[in-house]
Image (tube, rainbow, N blue to C red; front, side, top):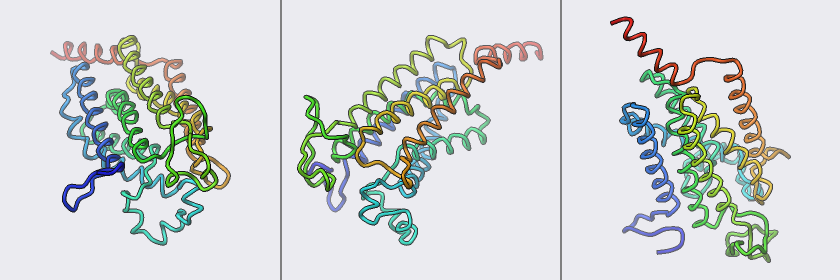
Length: 283
């Protein structure tokens, strides 16, 4: 057994993949619980999960292909390289998955699934958002196992040591760094707790999609700030791709949340009540 994983016969199992799957299953159980709280059939969570996983992985890989980290670009693994060698895109076990792409890919699957099964996208999004934050928190421990996603050099008591094999060339003489994965783990846990609290505290005042929009504000804000500590950013020209996307998503979601409440409209409770009244009237 090595740090990165373990072997089962000829098969090598990466801890990173095990951790991601563990987080995904826990997220599904949390979403199932949230669905039951809303008196919804929770089976659709498990039914949609394979599609979310597939599109999430595809989205994560494509985000990496279009926005490879600076160190990989310096090594020649640019977007052009991937298009000239398309078989390399499929080799995800060599690393290269972007969380922003995973979230976008997963949301595409959710949107299509909702359309086909006549489920409100906002309701589905509110149900899965806390679990998504939990899955992201757990997934960051895969970065710890791989000694990746560490921040700037640091002498703080909680700084972590990075082996020379995983250091950037310009930092070969530096051993200790900010545990950026740990910061994001804590931020995602806080986000999960906040979403669950909002869902319980303001249940009668929320509109479908409010919890999802809150997730799309809180997570991007944290990721935007943490990018300042990241050494190996994903850049497009001189622009930090992840940081720019996070700023756009956070601002857009905040504006959408503000306008939908400022302009009025029915809350989830009012819509449920309206449906019951309509049913009684029809009867």
